[in-house]
Image 1 (cartoon, rainbow, N blue to C red):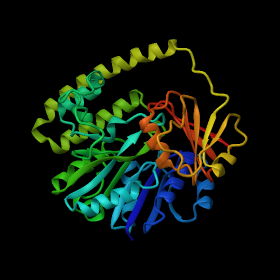
Image 2: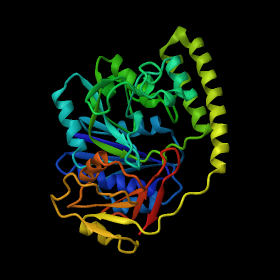
Image 3: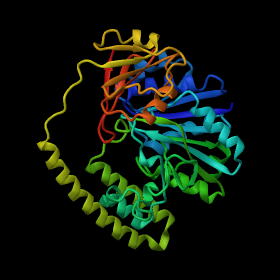
Length: 384
């Protein structure tokens, strides 16, 4: 078995459906097993997904084990020489898995690789690659200073904002939303530390991969879509969990520097709480956004046919005709992915022509349309 793909699901049934469809499209020429650990979901996942994906192995739990523990459960049973840890709210282009496998084969010093990530509007996600969070790095992140100085070498170190997102590069931390690693590296590093429940597991694992003598690499192409808000809602609870994860990391790896690290992170949490409070006041004054009534539907004929019940203009893309075209033309668009209009082609287009309006995705053969306009909040699903 060449590759084991492991996905932890929690109440994101229809996002996971499209994720699995994209993984199957991307693994057609790869010896692969796909494993989904469901962390006690109470949505339609248990009844809806297994009959649609008989080739996928589902592991059902009765409670939320946490991200690390759920991954370890599947990893104990995985048989692949390589392992891909993947979030359920992602879409993987057709050549993404082969690209990562080829890189690992050519670079024996590489313990793990991650991929450039874009949110549901086609915007680059800075957490695609990160630096290790010492006390001050965590403070800059929590206080919001990283957002104010996104390219400063020291202040933006958490997101490595001073480095180009367009180049292959050796980095310290990869995102657990998409991390491919050698099985022997995972075993040598010791797997996920289950003391981390929701955040920080990928930082800790990335660090232990480095300590095991390997390197972590970031690949800018082809990239993936990570809707993110489906698995992480950015609120004060998120800030508290993030703070606790950083606290565990500092205590575990920095030893004597823990007291200073804790002090600066306490200052960070206070500043972040204040900023979030004011942001909440500002948000309450905003008018609600407008709802899209007529979507511009673009893509492959077989995928567009499944969207017939959604009003809007249809634009069919013949095979090989995408080129440098702007597939959204500045309008709210559903990307209907299929044979002629691949996810890789769509992603390449929105990289070159960042969408100015809402973007949604539908992969042929799936039950709905998914998307997210804000990575800090829940996304949208409408069934067809």
